[in-house]
Each structure stands twice: as C-alpha cells, then as structure tokens.
Length: 181
Image 1 (tube, rainbow, N blue to C red):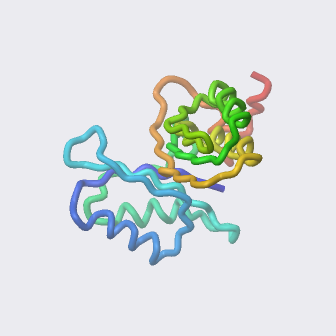
Image 2: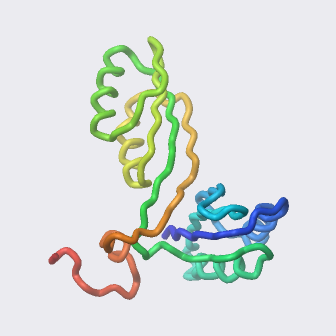
C-alpha cells in the first residue's frame, strides 16, 4: 500500500542529499519524491510516496521517525489517511494517425488534459490530475503508440473543507460503512 508523507524542511545545500541518503541507506521503496519551495520563505516542502513492504512492516511510520531526526527537518506528517488533494503532472508523446488525433481530441474533454504540441504524426499531451485519473488515462491510451512519457511525481496538500471519504475508507481502524451515506 502506498503512503504519502509531507515534509517541511529549511532550505540548505545538503538537505536533499541527507534525505536521499536516508532513503537509500534504509532501503525504503519510494514511488516518487517531489521537492519545491512552499508558502514559507526559506523553506521547501517534500512529498514522498513510499510503498509499504509485504513483510508486514510499516515503512511510512519508520520513514517519518527517521526524517524527524534529520537536521533542518521542521515537520513530518503522514497524510495518507487525511482528506487531501493530490496532483501529478504527466507529459505524454504519442505517435498517431489523423483519425487517432480526432479520437484523442474527444478524450481531452473527458479527461481534461491539454494538447501542447501537434504534428501530422504526433501529439504531446499535458495531464494534471490525481493518480487515479492518470492511471485511467494511461489504460485508455494503451491502444496508441507511446513514444515518451515523463511524470513529475505526486504533490499533496491537506483539505480544510470537508472529509474525503475515499481517504478514510482505507484507514485500518475505520469501521463505519461509508457506502450507506
């Protein structure tokens, strides 16, 4: 199971190196790691998506404990079971015929992606969406010839508005039937 960890760190030359060293030294299985400036000047926010191993251990819990020990780490939070907004940017280059271009233009309205480059034989799509929608789009695009694909990795922020039942449904201690509501 994937877990999402949000980390606030002070900007410093060796900060990312220390975090990557920790991840490799402890052999955490990372799906993505994204780092950029944030709402506080002089700080950066990392979003790390870690995959729990099948051995029954809790990698996310271990990772949060280890990250808290690092210099310049201000805050670490496992936000997996909180109501969150997750997004990822994906660029996809496809080799297509003119007929296939028309099909993909229709898909653009359904999946709400942009076509950022067009030639007689290729399209480049720009997709910004949650991981589930990206997976659904990739499955839909399987019948086209994929030339290149580049992903940014997930970013996430907690919601303040309302409870996101899809996130709490997976929480291990949650035992209310949310499908009744």
